[in-house]
Length: 602
Image (cartoon, rainbow, N blue to C red; front, side):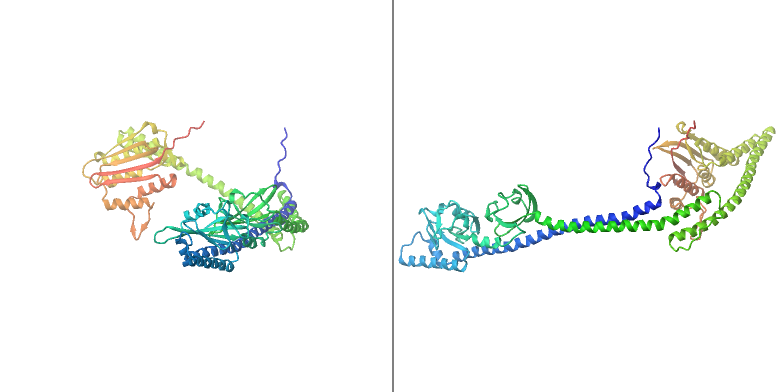
């Protein structure tokens, strides 16, 4: 079954790659730039529209809060007037002078209405239900202290409160304002010393001033501003609003913000800002389609720009690809001739660009190839000569082994068994030390090597040196770095057993501990002084080798430092030697190695 050809870009000719590359680096960035520009402009237009609307709302809020602040100031002026305070303290007028005072109060109220034309009416009610007003009166002679607005003012404990459009109240105006045409504000007048309610001031604010502050602000073609109170009730709305119900999100929103919502198939933008003094929220509402028209115009310009860039990019890429691919194809033909063995061909051209440099490098490469061929032939001859010398060198160790075996046989024949044993141990020592050039050997081979070494030392020191070796059976197939025990045992003999009085003992124990191979070498020799022990540990930790430090020769622990360096370089920093010693009692050296078992070849 034939495999389907797999699309690979590297299989295409360089001419097409160059055309594709030039188109990609010209058209794709242009398209990306166009999309990014369109998106950025759209965001900027939206942000500008939002910020502009918030500025307009902020100006309207300042105007509305100014009106509310004026109403609060009027309530303060009324509460501080002496005649009004006298009225609040009486149950009903009983004298002509009192009637004159009532008339004066009404004139005072009328003056405030003239000074503040946004005031539709002012009414002052004392705690006994009597009232004075310039424009308002009770329709049913009902006790006004039972009115809901009066109770709300009392509950607010002297703090200015905006109620909103009046509803179900028994007072009306001489001008006969509709409830929807005014906004009511109230404030209770409190006796400072007793904190008793003396009465309530009620002021009606004309909705006309709110309408004048908002209706002249147009958001696009059909957008507008509206004002709602903290309960979502409309304070002001234009005659033909785009929404019939205020979105509930406005009631649970922050002090300012914006969001979009689809209303009757039309996506509307809501931008709002709350007035901290009145707790009213001014909302700007307009259709998002009005900003889309501007965005579409910008998108048209961007698409036109990308189209012209594409036309220019295709033309330029075709021309450039031809100028670059033609000489490269020529170089390819030269290389095919070189592959066939023709090393005399050369590139001829005077171009100064990279292709010309490539042609000259091609010529230089042919010269180098000829030189390398000659050099390779010479190295092959040298390699064959080196192999011959290596084969000859391997004869010498075998001759040494055979000679030692002959000496051992002759010593045994003449009854010199001790000499024979030393020579046999020396032969084994050499054989394992060389290990056919291998650095990693079996643990059992390393143990055999150290037994041979101790056997030779035992022949020298006789009763002064005793040793024992213990190898756990489960680690017989473990491999280790060769010649790690001999330097440690040598130190134990020359710096421990040799320096003590009387016979000494060296014990070697190989075991598996916490997933590591641990070789423990213990001697009961002289031990190491604490200062030398600390210096030796520092050198071993720093991987010092045989070198001079600040003019002082390192003459102690060379073998252990050598083993430490070899272990860390072979297995890593987590493995190596640790040494403990007590002067006069002996030394313990622990060798920590990884568990690596001999792989069985099938």
